[in-house]
Image (cartoon, rainbow, N blue to C red; front, side, top):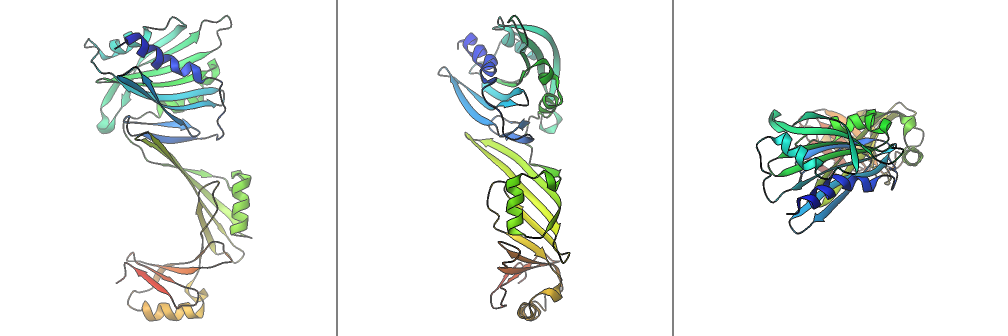
Length: 323
């Protein structure tokens, strides 16, 4: 193994991402890198990269090229052999500083990460600056070592950017294990123009009151799959609750308007009373359809967990978990 090649690629690769692009979304989302065994909050949708380093080593990266004046990357590599020595942090420091002639160290400190089960992972955080005449570029990195696996988490940017709230949030979010999606409440007025137009077309006249964004991503087997969906709730002119769940940027294909039993069409009421007399009173009733004015079926949820779906004419009935 060419140790210097590995160190150069692993620790300096981040310098090449600075200033190449700007992130389009201004929010963080939890990303579970299952192959790497860690989770971290990344700004915008990261790029997943696998960079071969010779014939034995591959560098795996999650990368956001530019977000609010900084670049972010999180990655790992597996060494084919153990690094000699017993002190884990000393191994990290020797590995890190081998090729740091192009940067000047400002400070370093020992840190500890957390894994599943509360186990501690030793690490080192270092702040560097470039040696150019203006010396404005900063690289803040956290390195960890578990067995033969090196982890690197980097923020690159100005002095203000690498010390700002976004950088702190990114680095403090690191967890050696998997984390699920995160839910965030939004103001309806802060939805994109595209989402607001889609909602107006699917549910005309509805006043939106609550917006919940669920977001996250999973990297596994060389693929990055992002979860991003909105749950929007509001009231129509008759004060019915209307709920729509959809993915931003995609067409809305389902709306749900919640009703009282007596508001169901007569044919649907008769069917429900005939077919559902042994099921008890439905706990929740919704009119479902691609828009609030085009109803495809009526959905009745019962307390015991079962569901009855009835067509608008009352002729077609589907029952789940009730028989």
